Length: 298
Image (cartoon, rainbow, N blue to C red; front, side, top):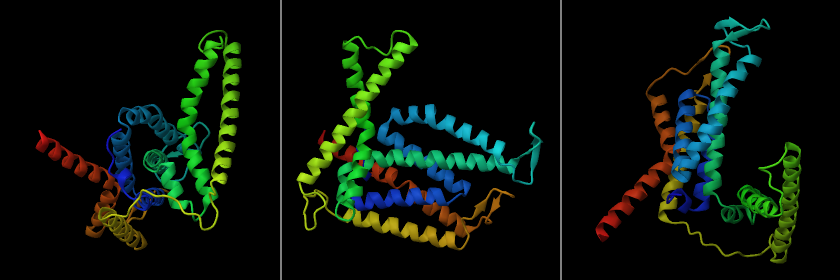
Protein backbone atom coordinates (compact mmCIF):
# COMPACT_ATOMS: atom_id res chain seq x y z
CA UNK A 1 0.00 0.00 0.00
CA UNK A 2 1.24 3.48 -0.82
CA UNK A 3 1.80 6.21 1.74
CA UNK A 4 -1.66 7.77 2.07
CA UNK A 5 -2.05 11.40 3.13
CA UNK A 6 -5.74 11.00 3.95
CA UNK A 7 -4.92 8.26 6.47
CA UNK A 8 -2.59 10.63 8.29
CA UNK A 9 -5.30 13.28 8.72
CA UNK A 10 -7.21 13.67 11.96
CA UNK A 11 -10.07 11.13 12.15
CA UNK A 12 -12.65 13.94 12.23
CA UNK A 13 -11.46 15.36 8.91
CA UNK A 14 -11.18 11.93 7.28
CA UNK A 15 -14.61 10.87 8.54
CA UNK A 16 -16.20 14.09 7.32
CA UNK A 17 -14.72 13.55 3.88
CA UNK A 18 -16.23 10.09 3.50
CA UNK A 19 -19.59 11.22 4.87
CA UNK A 20 -19.69 14.00 2.28
CA UNK A 21 -18.62 11.97 -0.75
CA UNK A 22 -20.92 9.08 0.14
CA UNK A 23 -23.82 11.40 0.84
CA UNK A 24 -23.40 13.41 -2.37
CA UNK A 25 -22.89 10.23 -4.41
CA UNK A 26 -26.23 8.86 -3.22
CA UNK A 27 -28.11 12.17 -3.51
CA UNK A 28 -26.76 13.65 -6.75
CA UNK A 29 -27.96 11.68 -9.77
CA UNK A 30 -26.47 14.03 -12.35
CA UNK A 31 -24.35 11.96 -14.79
CA UNK A 32 -21.42 14.37 -14.51
CA UNK A 33 -21.44 14.05 -10.71
CA UNK A 34 -21.69 10.26 -10.93
CA UNK A 35 -18.81 10.08 -13.40
CA UNK A 36 -16.61 12.35 -11.27
CA UNK A 37 -17.35 10.37 -8.10
CA UNK A 38 -16.82 7.00 -9.81
CA UNK A 39 -13.50 7.99 -11.38
CA UNK A 40 -12.28 9.50 -8.11
CA UNK A 41 -13.31 6.44 -6.07
CA UNK A 42 -11.62 4.01 -8.45
CA UNK A 43 -8.52 6.19 -8.72
CA UNK A 44 -8.23 6.49 -4.94
CA UNK A 45 -8.80 2.75 -4.54
CA UNK A 46 -6.03 2.01 -7.01
CA UNK A 47 -3.69 4.33 -5.11
CA UNK A 48 -4.54 2.63 -1.81
CA UNK A 49 -4.57 -1.02 -2.90
CA UNK A 50 -2.79 -1.09 -6.24
CA UNK A 51 -3.46 -4.11 -8.43
CA UNK A 52 -5.96 -5.54 -5.96
CA UNK A 53 -8.31 -2.64 -6.68
CA UNK A 54 -7.96 -3.11 -10.44
CA UNK A 55 -8.65 -6.84 -10.15
CA UNK A 56 -11.65 -6.19 -7.89
CA UNK A 57 -13.08 -3.64 -10.33
CA UNK A 58 -12.70 -5.93 -13.35
CA UNK A 59 -13.89 -9.14 -11.69
CA UNK A 60 -16.75 -7.81 -9.59
CA UNK A 61 -17.63 -4.18 -10.23
CA UNK A 62 -17.80 -4.28 -14.04
CA UNK A 63 -20.05 -7.38 -14.17
CA UNK A 64 -22.24 -5.82 -11.48
CA UNK A 65 -22.56 -2.67 -13.58
CA UNK A 66 -23.54 -4.65 -16.68
CA UNK A 67 -26.02 -6.90 -14.86
CA UNK A 68 -27.74 -4.02 -13.07
CA UNK A 69 -27.92 -1.98 -16.27
CA UNK A 70 -29.46 -4.89 -18.17
CA UNK A 71 -31.94 -5.98 -15.50
CA UNK A 72 -33.47 -2.56 -14.86
CA UNK A 73 -35.11 -2.17 -18.31
CA UNK A 74 -36.64 -5.62 -17.88
CA UNK A 75 -38.61 -4.45 -14.84
CA UNK A 76 -38.88 -0.69 -15.36
CA UNK A 77 -40.70 0.43 -18.48
CA UNK A 78 -41.09 4.16 -17.85
CA UNK A 79 -39.98 6.67 -20.43
CA UNK A 80 -41.21 8.23 -23.63
CA UNK A 81 -38.55 7.01 -26.08
CA UNK A 82 -39.59 3.48 -27.02
CA UNK A 83 -36.80 1.50 -28.68
CA UNK A 84 -38.51 -1.89 -28.99
CA UNK A 85 -41.01 -4.20 -27.35
CA UNK A 86 -40.04 -7.12 -25.13
CA UNK A 87 -41.53 -10.61 -25.66
CA UNK A 88 -43.85 -9.88 -22.73
CA UNK A 89 -45.27 -6.91 -24.61
CA UNK A 90 -43.73 -4.28 -22.34
CA UNK A 91 -41.83 -1.45 -24.02
CA UNK A 92 -38.06 -1.13 -23.86
CA UNK A 93 -37.34 2.57 -23.42
CA UNK A 94 -34.15 4.58 -23.66
CA UNK A 95 -34.91 6.30 -20.36
CA UNK A 96 -35.12 3.00 -18.49
CA UNK A 97 -31.75 1.92 -19.91
CA UNK A 98 -30.13 5.21 -18.91
CA UNK A 99 -31.71 5.00 -15.46
CA UNK A 100 -30.38 1.45 -15.05
CA UNK A 101 -26.86 2.54 -16.00
CA UNK A 102 -27.10 5.47 -13.59
CA UNK A 103 -28.31 3.27 -10.71
CA UNK A 104 -25.61 0.68 -11.38
CA UNK A 105 -22.94 3.38 -11.52
CA UNK A 106 -24.17 4.81 -8.23
CA UNK A 107 -24.08 1.35 -6.63
CA UNK A 108 -20.52 0.51 -7.63
CA UNK A 109 -19.38 4.04 -6.74
CA UNK A 110 -20.73 3.70 -3.21
CA UNK A 111 -19.11 0.26 -2.88
CA UNK A 112 -15.79 1.69 -4.11
CA UNK A 113 -15.93 4.53 -1.60
CA UNK A 114 -16.72 2.11 1.22
CA UNK A 115 -13.72 0.04 0.14
CA UNK A 116 -11.54 3.14 0.52
CA UNK A 117 -13.27 3.93 3.82
CA UNK A 118 -12.31 0.51 5.14
CA UNK A 119 -8.65 1.16 4.30
CA UNK A 120 -8.49 4.66 5.84
CA UNK A 121 -10.87 4.55 8.81
CA UNK A 122 -9.33 1.86 10.97
CA UNK A 123 -10.98 0.46 14.09
CA UNK A 124 -8.93 2.65 16.44
CA UNK A 125 -10.13 5.77 14.61
CA UNK A 126 -13.76 4.69 14.92
CA UNK A 127 -13.31 4.00 18.61
CA UNK A 128 -11.69 7.44 18.99
CA UNK A 129 -14.60 9.16 17.21
CA UNK A 130 -17.56 7.34 18.74
CA UNK A 131 -16.14 5.76 21.90
CA UNK A 132 -17.45 8.47 24.22
CA UNK A 133 -20.67 9.23 22.37
CA UNK A 134 -21.95 5.75 21.51
CA UNK A 135 -19.44 3.26 22.97
CA UNK A 136 -21.47 0.13 22.19
CA UNK A 137 -22.00 1.06 18.52
CA UNK A 138 -18.36 2.12 18.25
CA UNK A 139 -17.21 -1.28 19.47
CA UNK A 140 -19.58 -3.09 17.09
CA UNK A 141 -18.39 -1.02 14.12
CA UNK A 142 -14.73 -1.56 14.88
CA UNK A 143 -15.26 -5.30 15.30
CA UNK A 144 -17.32 -5.54 12.12
CA UNK A 145 -14.69 -3.78 10.02
CA UNK A 146 -12.01 -6.09 11.38
CA UNK A 147 -14.01 -9.26 10.81
CA UNK A 148 -13.61 -9.45 7.02
CA UNK A 149 -9.78 -9.35 6.87
CA UNK A 150 -9.51 -11.48 9.99
CA UNK A 151 -12.00 -14.01 8.59
CA UNK A 152 -9.97 -14.24 5.41
CA UNK A 153 -6.74 -14.86 7.28
CA UNK A 154 -8.28 -17.29 9.77
CA UNK A 155 -10.06 -19.40 7.17
CA UNK A 156 -6.71 -19.93 5.42
CA UNK A 157 -5.20 -21.15 8.69
CA UNK A 158 -8.14 -23.47 9.35
CA UNK A 159 -8.08 -24.83 5.80
CA UNK A 160 -4.34 -25.51 6.06
CA UNK A 161 -4.74 -27.34 9.39
CA UNK A 162 -7.65 -29.40 8.05
CA UNK A 163 -5.60 -30.27 4.97
CA UNK A 164 -2.95 -31.77 7.25
CA UNK A 165 -5.69 -33.99 8.73
CA UNK A 166 -6.65 -35.24 5.28
CA UNK A 167 -9.65 -32.94 4.86
CA UNK A 168 -8.64 -31.13 1.69
CA UNK A 169 -11.50 -29.28 -0.02
CA UNK A 170 -9.61 -29.19 -3.32
CA UNK A 171 -9.67 -32.98 -3.85
CA UNK A 172 -12.22 -35.73 -3.71
CA UNK A 173 -15.86 -35.99 -4.69
CA UNK A 174 -18.25 -33.07 -4.53
CA UNK A 175 -20.03 -34.50 -1.49
CA UNK A 176 -16.77 -35.02 0.40
CA UNK A 177 -15.47 -31.54 -0.49
CA UNK A 178 -18.78 -30.00 0.56
CA UNK A 179 -18.64 -31.85 3.90
CA UNK A 180 -15.09 -30.63 4.52
CA UNK A 181 -16.13 -27.10 3.55
CA UNK A 182 -19.00 -27.15 6.04
CA UNK A 183 -16.59 -28.38 8.71
CA UNK A 184 -14.21 -25.48 8.02
CA UNK A 185 -17.09 -23.00 8.06
CA UNK A 186 -18.34 -24.40 11.38
CA UNK A 187 -14.87 -24.01 12.92
CA UNK A 188 -14.65 -20.46 11.58
CA UNK A 189 -18.03 -19.44 13.02
CA UNK A 190 -17.13 -20.95 16.40
CA UNK A 191 -13.84 -19.06 16.39
CA UNK A 192 -15.61 -15.81 15.46
CA UNK A 193 -18.15 -16.12 18.27
CA UNK A 194 -15.49 -16.94 20.85
CA UNK A 195 -13.34 -14.06 19.61
CA UNK A 196 -16.26 -11.62 19.85
CA UNK A 197 -17.03 -12.72 23.42
CA UNK A 198 -13.37 -12.43 24.43
CA UNK A 199 -13.14 -8.96 22.91
CA UNK A 200 -16.31 -7.79 24.67
CA UNK A 201 -15.12 -9.17 28.03
CA UNK A 202 -11.71 -7.59 27.55
CA UNK A 203 -13.19 -4.17 26.78
CA UNK A 204 -15.58 -4.45 29.71
CA UNK A 205 -12.76 -5.36 32.12
CA UNK A 206 -10.92 -2.24 31.00
CA UNK A 207 -13.87 -0.03 31.82
CA UNK A 208 -14.80 0.69 28.23
CA UNK A 209 -17.95 2.83 28.04
CA UNK A 210 -17.96 3.89 31.70
CA UNK A 211 -18.67 7.60 32.32
CA UNK A 212 -15.58 9.69 32.95
CA UNK A 213 -13.22 7.13 31.49
CA UNK A 214 -10.27 8.66 29.65
CA UNK A 215 -8.36 7.12 26.77
CA UNK A 216 -4.95 7.65 25.29
CA UNK A 217 -5.00 9.26 21.85
CA UNK A 218 -2.23 9.79 19.33
CA UNK A 219 -4.33 12.12 17.19
CA UNK A 220 -3.62 15.84 17.20
CA UNK A 221 -5.56 18.46 15.27
CA UNK A 222 -2.88 20.20 13.19
CA UNK A 223 -2.92 23.16 10.82
CA UNK A 224 -3.27 20.82 7.84
CA UNK A 225 -6.34 19.27 9.45
CA UNK A 226 -7.90 22.70 9.96
CA UNK A 227 -7.27 23.68 6.35
CA UNK A 228 -8.70 20.39 5.07
CA UNK A 229 -11.74 20.68 7.33
CA UNK A 230 -12.44 24.24 6.16
CA UNK A 231 -12.13 23.13 2.53
CA UNK A 232 -14.53 20.23 3.05
CA UNK A 233 -17.11 22.42 4.80
CA UNK A 234 -16.82 25.14 2.14
CA UNK A 235 -17.22 22.62 -0.68
CA UNK A 236 -20.23 21.07 1.03
CA UNK A 237 -21.84 24.49 1.54
CA UNK A 238 -21.35 25.37 -2.15
CA UNK A 239 -22.79 22.06 -3.35
CA UNK A 240 -25.75 22.14 -0.99
CA UNK A 241 -26.55 25.71 -2.05
CA UNK A 242 -26.32 24.79 -5.72
CA UNK A 243 -28.51 21.73 -5.24
CA UNK A 244 -31.08 23.79 -3.33
CA UNK A 245 -31.36 26.16 -6.31
CA UNK A 246 -31.82 23.19 -8.68
CA UNK A 247 -28.51 23.54 -10.50
CA UNK A 248 -27.66 19.86 -9.99
CA UNK A 249 -31.14 18.51 -10.67
CA UNK A 250 -31.36 15.67 -13.17
CA UNK A 251 -34.10 13.15 -13.92
CA UNK A 252 -34.20 10.07 -16.13
CA UNK A 253 -37.88 9.11 -16.14
CA UNK A 254 -40.15 9.98 -17.89
CA UNK A 255 -37.85 12.37 -19.79
CA UNK A 256 -34.09 12.45 -19.43
CA UNK A 257 -32.82 15.94 -18.71
CA UNK A 258 -31.72 18.41 -16.08
CA UNK A 259 -30.88 22.01 -15.39
CA UNK A 260 -29.42 23.92 -18.36
CA UNK A 261 -25.65 24.10 -18.44
CA UNK A 262 -24.30 27.51 -17.41
CA UNK A 263 -21.39 29.10 -15.54
CA UNK A 264 -22.76 28.44 -12.01
CA UNK A 265 -23.29 24.78 -12.86
CA UNK A 266 -19.76 24.53 -14.21
CA UNK A 267 -18.52 25.99 -10.92
CA UNK A 268 -20.50 23.36 -9.00
CA UNK A 269 -18.97 20.58 -11.10
CA UNK A 270 -15.51 22.03 -10.40
CA UNK A 271 -16.24 22.16 -6.65
CA UNK A 272 -17.50 18.58 -6.67
CA UNK A 273 -14.46 17.42 -8.63
CA UNK A 274 -12.17 19.15 -6.13
CA UNK A 275 -14.01 17.49 -3.24
CA UNK A 276 -13.88 13.98 -4.70
CA UNK A 277 -10.27 14.31 -5.83
CA UNK A 278 -9.08 15.73 -2.49
CA UNK A 279 -7.26 12.52 -1.38
CA UNK A 280 -5.51 12.17 -4.74
CA UNK A 281 -4.41 15.81 -4.61
CA UNK A 282 -3.06 15.39 -1.08
CA UNK A 283 -1.22 12.21 -2.05
CA UNK A 284 0.30 13.73 -5.18
CA UNK A 285 1.43 16.71 -3.12
CA UNK A 286 2.95 14.51 -0.41
CA UNK A 287 4.64 12.24 -2.96
CA UNK A 288 6.20 15.27 -4.63
CA UNK A 289 7.56 16.43 -1.27
CA UNK A 290 9.03 13.01 -0.56
CA UNK A 291 10.71 12.94 -3.95
CA UNK A 292 12.26 16.36 -3.33
CA UNK A 293 13.49 15.28 0.09
CA UNK A 294 14.86 12.00 -1.27
CA UNK A 295 16.68 13.73 -4.13
CA UNK A 296 18.17 16.29 -1.72
CA UNK A 297 19.62 13.52 0.43
CA UNK A 298 21.34 11.81 -2.50
